[in-house]
Amino acid sequence: MTHVRPTPGVLAPVGVDSFFQPRRVAFWVMVFFTANGLFFEATQLLTAYRIVPVAVLFGVVVWTLYTIPVLLFFRSLDLFEQHPPLGYVLAFAWGGFAATYLAVTANGAVFSLAAKLGGPQFGADW
Image (cartoon, rainbow, N blue to C red):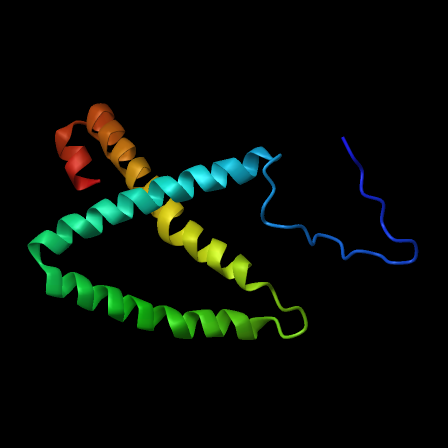
């Protein structure tokens, strides 16, 4: 194992690590859930595209146009410490793919538990 010695007199900023950290478990958890979410969203979009292609294409264009002002707003929040573009890409990928995939899975589990614990009517109302 090699250790990189810092240059004398040069201090690296605290908390500025690369996003690519294959030795950390959190990196692989992020990659796993983001890849699962991307696959899940792609299959959903392809299924919907076979049924209503114009609506899917229109929806993708509208959501892309909706994302641009939100991204510009986030970039303008912190003027003194600009974050790398890869950070925004990872944040949007996590929120758009991984969190969506996890939420769909968790919602199904919660509805199933509600129906089992409170009955079918309670699960439908929940």
